Length: 112
Image 1 (cartoon, rainbow, N blue to C red):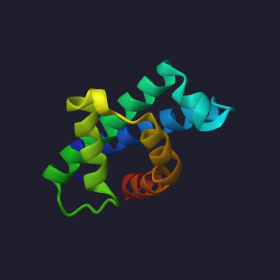
Image 2 (image 1 turned 45 degrees about the vertical axis):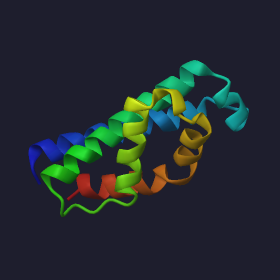
Image 3 (image 1 turned 180 degrees about the vertical axis):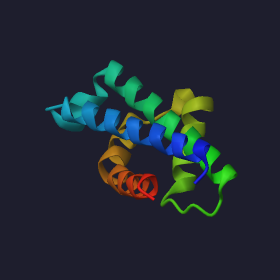
């Protein structure tokens, strides 16, 4: 695997760990999360990096299969260009429901 692709996968892995730590520090669930602007913005930035890294991977090596690739890239575009319509509820839900699958896929790719 290309060094750049490995680096981007590693960046994704780091961002996933960061998002997991944000969730672990929220004991009041989604309501507490969305009321904490600092955590929301931190998660927003981590998802932006994930989307950008996935976009670069898809262009560099389109044979790499990652579930929900276009959704993550689309989320990144909304965060970067539609900052005023970012839904922190959606970020929370994505972190809860979809991020574990991405984490597993990225770990498998990094270990090949």
